[in-house]
Length: 167
Image 1 (cartoon, rainbow, N blue to C red):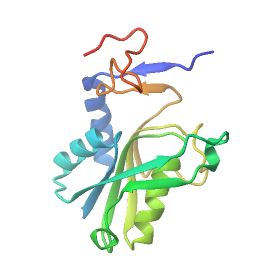
Image 2 (tube, rainbow, N blue to C red; image 1 turned 45 degrees about the vertical axis):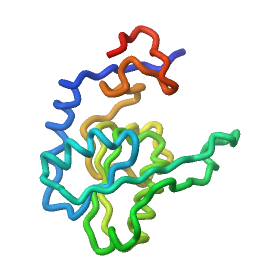
Image 3 (cartoon, rainbow, N blue to C red; image 1 turned 60 degrees about the vertical axis):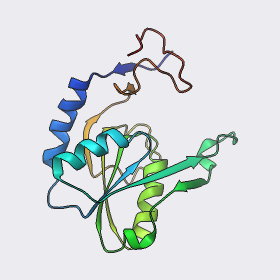
Image 4 (cartoon, rainbow, N blue to C red; image 1 turned 30 degrees about the horizontal axis):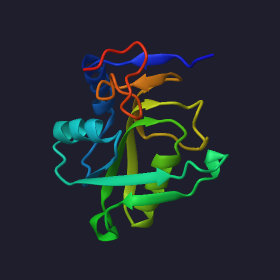
């Protein structure tokens, strides 16, 4: 049976941000966006919270293994340790599903000597492989396949998704 799908509008994203932003207290020294999903929510958070120290991380897991949970991450891009050390860092992604990518980034940020907190638009506790952890801040809990407006009309390979009109 196909998984339930939610196709979001920009208005939906704004409503999620309205729920997410008030949760965050204090000042962050840096914002680390996980590409690609974290770029748009990260930019919105940075603008709203006036965070000007913005970094990116690109993490890839091999898809060649039968059991994807055993894949070892490769950091295609990550800030130098000195750029993070001693800072309060907000790590942003669009969704916390299995948690593999974001927990990998948390570990690397903390290994640099930074304090890591996380923010996502959606949290999927049923898919989370790390039952003792979850996002610091999240706007909504879901079990659905989420299609954000910046993905609308395109599948993973640029092929239109069934039932969606390209933008």
